[in-house]
Length: 355
Image (tube, rainbow, N blue to C red; front, side, top):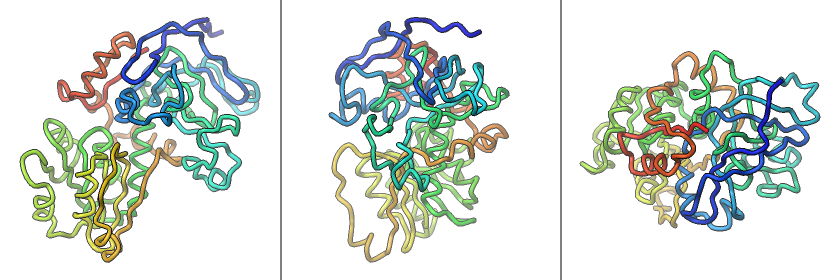
């Protein structure tokens, strides 16, 4: 019998740049929901923008709000309706942020990440850590549709990366990579390095990573064929010199105006840009080139059933996670963890929170 506490510690966002670790009631699982004890959460690149209030009235919709959406843990209580689906207390699970309504046409087609009822809990949609309560806490409640079971042979702190790795895989799939293609990844943070590995898994012949600093050394160690430091040279010229201008696929993971503009500049005629980076400001684009060169410009949001796909890839080492985990902090030290992540202290890539 698993004992569940009455109260828990949670990172509560009270307003832009105002957060604290507070004692709050442990949530109760509802119909087709699981209550899980969080073993490990990871800071996502979107989290600092949410904390700063850069998505006003969108992420989150209201305060106070519990953030966090990359996590793994253990099931400690089952909501009603799960008794016939094989779930058990003690199961190891990893979570994802998106739960579609299940009823709209997009959900029925498997595109629950594009649920028509986004942001409407009364229509059964949830977006954990963004609109709905997330995992920077001792416990978290998720719909059964937003967790997967993971093998107990996979350490939970590695399993917490299943969500970002699955997002990277979804982004790579959106790029229509053919075997042997040259792929350029813009951004050398965790999403860029995961995208590099996913590109290799699906058959990319050469992967070039554009970024800066110590993270480029990590990209080389993980399998990048070439790296370009945009702080030291003109990255567009450098990539063109490495490829002869033939770049059929660009993966944009930085989300800055310059990076997105460079993606358009680099992509060959008939090529594809898959973009997971979310710009905070408007981005002027060379639409003439996009039109005349028939460039496919494709957004990628969250994942679309890729979680189960990446588990064996993580377990057999084709996608490396452990060496990307650079720091670990208790929940009470979240401010230090966030500063470490934001300022890339000590070569920070994946920063863990241990509630």
